[in-house]
Amino acid sequence: MSRPTSDTLEEKLRKRCQDRCKARCCRYITISLPAPRQKADFDEISWFLAHENISVYVEGRRWHVEVRNRCKYLTRQNRCRIYNNRPDVCREYDIESCEYPDRPAHTLHFDTRDEFDAWWARKRARERRRRKRRTHEAKQ
Image 1: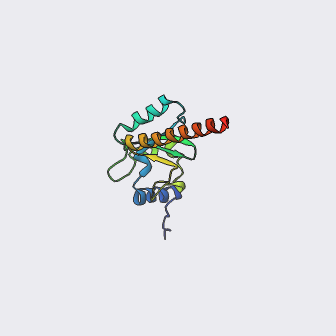
Image 2: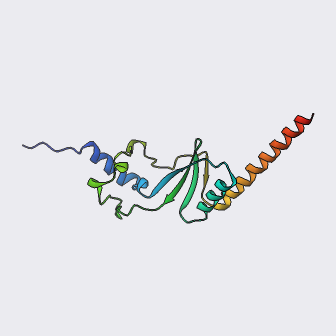
Image 3: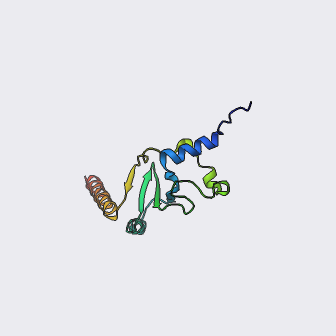
């Protein structure tokens, strides 16, 4: 009499990924950005957001650009066509820290150039008020 075979842990995690979150991590890439310091940095972020399927977010104090674009090896059933030969970055992804079912909350998150430009304008206005207040206090 043969014993039933149980799925390996990796197979169980892979199935959970496919069934529950629909391979969310395979539908975008994230690239770290240096924190903006100068006008040109803010202008570059505004330019990123002028493109389709782009978001910019801040997690803690780290800035990132997110490009929403499916991996070309992901099937319609959310399975990896090159699973056994996938890149190390995919192999090292910790499925236990998967963002399913929701995106993590970010310190700041911008999906459009208008959102970012409005935030940047408010930030510049606060900086001007702060400098004006310091100048006024220094004169007294």
